[in-house]
Every structure is written in C-alpha cells, then in structure tokens.
Length: 279
Ligand code: ARG
Image (cartoon, rainbow, N blue to C red; front, side, top):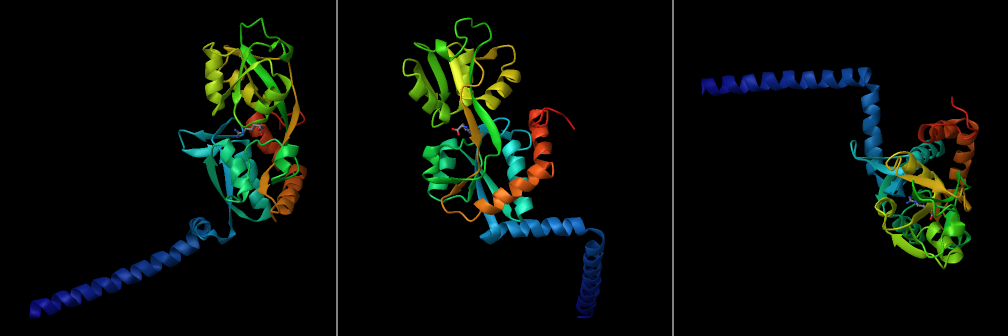
C-alpha cells in the first residue's frame, strides 16, 4: 500500500515536471523560432483547401517544367514563375503534374484552377480556355541528326518522317503545312528525340526553347537545329473560362516584369536576361 502511494506520488511529481518542461519549451520555441512556427502555419494553410488554388502542369518540358529526380520536386521556369505570381497575387497554389493533354482538359472541365505548361495561346484553344497575357515568346523549330546534310529547312520535309509530341501546336503545324511529310506523333517528346538519335525518324519539330535545350544538353553533339524559327508563338497561363484569377494574375505578371523578378527567373533558366544581358 505504502509503496503504491509512493509510486503514485512520484508519477504525479514527474508529470508535473514534465508539463512544466513542455510549457517552457513551447514558450521558448515561440520566442526563438518564429520561422518554424511560420512554416507550420503555411503547411496547415495548404491543407484547408479553400484559399489554395490547384495548378496543373506537365511532367516533361525542359526548361519550363520537369521532375528533378534527385529532389523529387517539379522545377523549371514555369514552376518558379507561377510560385512568384501566386506570392505577388497573395494566393496559395498546389502544383500537380500530368500529361500535357491533361492540362488542357483540366482547364476545359475546370477540374484545376490554373494551368501552366509552356502552353501556346491559340485561337482554337481560346474558344474553350481563358489565357493570361503572354508571358514568353517562343516558336517552333526543327532538329535533325548532327551529320544530316539532307534536311536544311522545312522545305526539305516532303517524304520524311517527322516526329513530334501529340496534341501540341507542332502537330497542328505539320498537319496543316506539311501534308506530304510523314507525321510521327509521340505521347512524350523525349521519345521523339530518342527516335531521331537512333535514326528511326528524320526530324523532330517542336518548341524552339525545348529543342535548343535538348540539343545543347542531353543530345549534345548528336543533334542540331536547322531552318531557324518556323512559327512565332506566345505562351500564356491557362484558366477555365470565366475564371476570376485572370485579372489578378495579369496584374501580378505586370509587377514581376516591372520589378525584375521575371528577368531573374528567366536568367536562372535561360542563362541570360530577356534582353540578352546577365545580372
Ligand atoms: N507550346 C506547345 C503547345 O502549346 C507545346 C507545349 C508543350 N508543353 C508541355 N508542357 N509539354 O502546344
């Protein structure tokens, strides 16, 4: 009996100490680590879905969006840009990666709030999707094997196998302008480049920034671009029709262009600022 009550007393004393210790840890945490508190708040905020907007992007379009296999994180120009735009507009975003077609469908069905995927603003798409102001000037170009002397420009595509990614503006361009070339569409552009390297297709047509990036990195020495820019295009951020986010995102884009943030992000991914200088 006596032993029991002693033990009980000990437990009570210990738990009193424990609680006091906890209390003091908590208050000193508050004083000393505001950053930790803050990030917790952000994490909690992300879970309450009300003010978090979903962003649909694609999985493979260097240097605009791709998965960093080491960190497991999405990265690229578009990823940095949408995060900066969200900060500037005072909204939170949750980014999800999918196939490019899924980004367009996600806007049409309003399953996602925002789409950013190096998406070209076209009249046809604008019939079912809203776009922000243009945020990047791009265009299409051709890649061939480094030792190819046959194809010097798009004028040489008749009878050739030309690969691209299905559902993109390159596919439309080839269908409309080169009916006498053999169009070989792939669900992913990297497959198209690999087919080109292995000689199973004669050329790849795709967005110039992506072609140039690939030609200068993974395919260095194996592929080259020919014929210059084929069709000027502009990328826009996509929204479901009638979205209330179009205006605030356009405002935020203007601000980021004026205050240099846009140029910083551009330089990070393209090695120079839009005007060709470096900081
Ligand atoms: N700019 C082209 C288009 O809009 C290709 C975009 C591909 N983007 C991507 N994230 N895979 O059709």
